[in-house]
Image 1 (cartoon, rainbow, N blue to C red):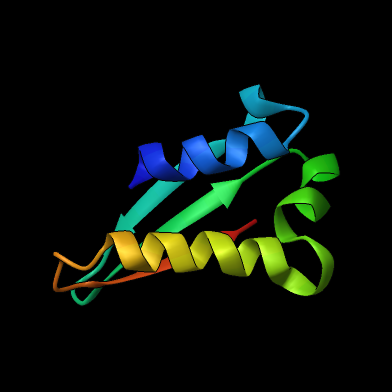
Image 2 (cartoon, one colour):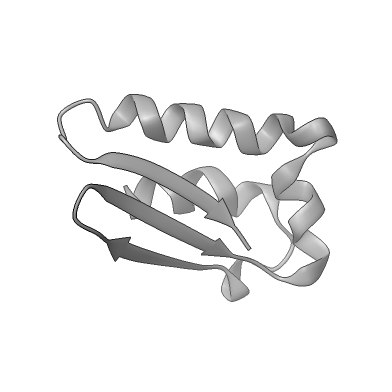
Length: 75
């Protein structure tokens, strides 16, 4: 999942070297915290959150095998 997130986000941002994906594994969910450069936050979120919603949709669909829910937080 981390590789998928990085593959989707890297072409969208200007500072890919500052992108960081952290995983927090809790009892019933996996939370991916994506941290990018301050100038790139708007590019990841998009107008009205459309790009962020699309990224989350792809990650949710890719997680169909796992019993835990997956959440993506953009910092």
